[in-house]
Image 1 (cartoon, helix red, strand yellow):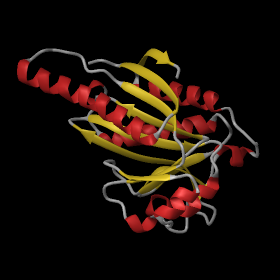
Image 2 (cartoon, helix red, strand yellow; image 1 turned 90 degrees about the vertical axis):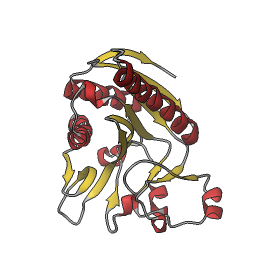
Image 3 (tube, helix red, strand yellow; image 1 turned 60 degrees about the vertical axis):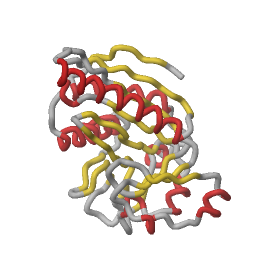
Length: 237
């Protein structure tokens, strides 16, 4: 088992470039696992955690409904956004400036082999982080992600999640709204769930802007605690 975690902050990076980088790291881990199985090589598999902010982009999961994107390709160009259909679970999601996107690309066999536990730990990481800002966040039954005021007419989502896993290796991850332009969420039915609002940390705190680097540090602290992982190295963009 290898519980060391290599963290990279990619800064502001194009979605497609980041997706390709994820795929390369994902394949590297899978290839090691295959070699270990075939040759009993005994090689350790690495665990990566990428932080990134993307330009405006909408992504649709493999089980998602294209009808949940409410604008045409021409309109996307007008608002400076792009669209990709991708290989994660979940429906449609928006990424953009002011949002923390996290991509853990880890071998769950280094930690535990339970994808549901993995998702719950990602949610708990966000819930614990928001609690440090005095925000009481929670899960919504049957809906992956992190929410506020669940079960009330004011229910709103602050963090979306969608992952892919193969041979217990994960990719994709979570998107936590910090200083996001919430107007971009009006161009879709978020996660395919009608009638639910979206929020961000700066709105909830009544601030013009929240320190994103500070939030990243808190997320990473809770991730390493929950997964009992060891921070190996942190590389800034």
